[in-house]
Amino acid sequence: MLQVSNLSVARGGMTLLCGVVFSLSAGQVLVLRGANGLGKTTLLRCISRLQDSVEGQIIAPETVAYSGHADGLKGQMTVLENLVFWASIYHGPSPNVALDAYNLHRLADRPAANLSAGQKRRLGLARLQVSGCALWVMDEPTVSLDVHNVALFRAALNQHVQSGGAAVITTHIDLEHASARVLDLTRFKARGVASSSAFEEALE
Amino acid sequence: MIQLFLRDVGLSVRSGGGFGLALIFFLIVVTLIPFALGPDQSALAVIAPGVLWLGALLACLLSLDRIFGLDFEDGTLDLLATSPLPLEAVYVAKASAHWLTTGLPLSLAAPVLGVLLNLDYETGKILCLSLLLGTPALSLIGAFGASLTLGVKRGGLLLSLLVLPLYVPSLIFGSQAVRLVGQGLEFDVALILLSAISLGAAAILPFASGAALRINLR
Image (cartoon, rainbow over all chains, first blue to last red):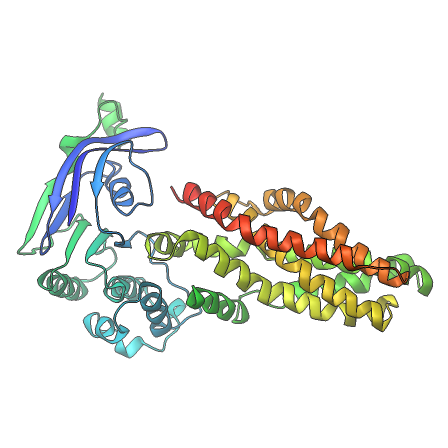
């Protein structure tokens, strides 16, 4: 489903990762790990074609469901309206399943502006379900979710994977997902990259 | 694409959407002119076409940075860029929604406000027609400017500087058409050229804007 070979990515003219190689087939979850500023987000943006890579090749489906740091919700629209909009953009399935998966039925008629950070994130994740895309590309999806909602996310992810989907996820928590492989990106770090913390810089 | 258009129209009429802002700005500008120039009715009638066109043009500028700015800030534009919808279609949907919520109300209000400037009924009709033909170009060029200045912090001023020179041809032909009616002369050519600008913008700018958006989202 997704094949990445000899990929180099750069942000702001500075190469962050080089020689990245991995592949992902249907029914698999790949968890990307690495320190802050290593280039995880940049890599995901390349996979989603939001950004060009410096070199190398990415073979990915025509459309992927991307979820970034921002949820892309409209505060003036209700939870249901937000989902219906995205479902119509992607020609995806009806929002009911997504509302079920993230326990959003009770909030369906609330304007998204009135939701808490965790509720917004749940709605952002529910958007992936109405996209109907096989490949989910997720940048720290569990931020601001509590333990219970992380479990909901895990269940939704399981369901997606079992129905032939796949996902690339960056996260700092342990997803405890059975079919998840973990790839540490630290070994692909491009030489000469400024270290991420001032403390490390001071040591060098 | 139609859903995005409907969503944008819906958002602009809801609270905080800014619908009516342009219209009220237009109303205020046009009301201020007689205060500034004095109540000489014949003088007002002479400058009315130019003032009304200029007022509509400035009112149109007000909401340009919202076209892409809000969606860029909350991440929606990233998601739209990864969706099956091409960015050219996103541009067309957003520019059309901007025209429907700004250009169309301004065109319909202009002959009414023309009364304040002693504009007669016949001339008012042509004014309305010239705005209907010309404001699509204002929205299309403006949305293109908005896609160029995307991500520039407080890019509103830069956007105005970029867009206003591009508005000059529409302004010339639009106000000229109305002036010619007032003098009882043929005005067809001005209206045809005005429509040509709108059509040309609709043909070329989606691709330019799509490319600009793609670069700015990187």
